[in-house]
Length: 184
Image (cartoon, rainbow, N blue to C red; front, side, top):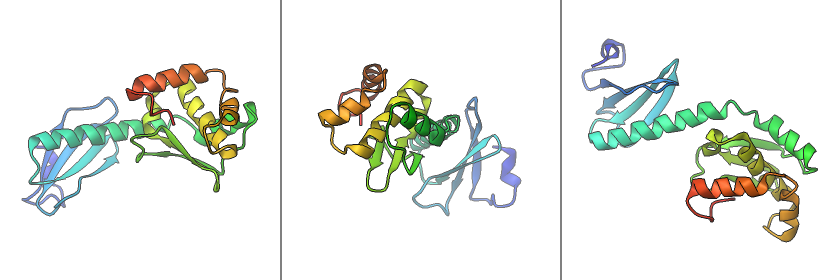
């Protein structure tokens, strides 16, 4: 049991369990009878605090520790990339429209990016943050091209292929996704 069990807010129903450390942060798991369905996590200093319902099995706990640790590692990795600046550079370099906004999204599990041409917004999966910069740049260029051409037409691909590492990046993303249906 961790020293945190005696801190305010950690009553008799709540137990803190320290999980294996990550190079970026230490993980503490708290179980509570008050928490019924959801799993929560927040990073405080160098500690990722994961709150679980008390009824969860050790297998489910291990799953959520892995899942939340991976999410926070991706977020921390994503912070290294300045998306607005990168998108501006890609737009200028390859003569594409600039987005009105570009941001990371944790919710994308089956796509690498998405674009809403009517509002000019671009979203990138945080899963990309761990990939090489040239792959992230390709996805940015791909989404910027959608600001002008919504469909994956010949005109669209002419815009995308202005980026010289397009073929290489597509191959990388196919390898990472396990199939060829996940390059959008």
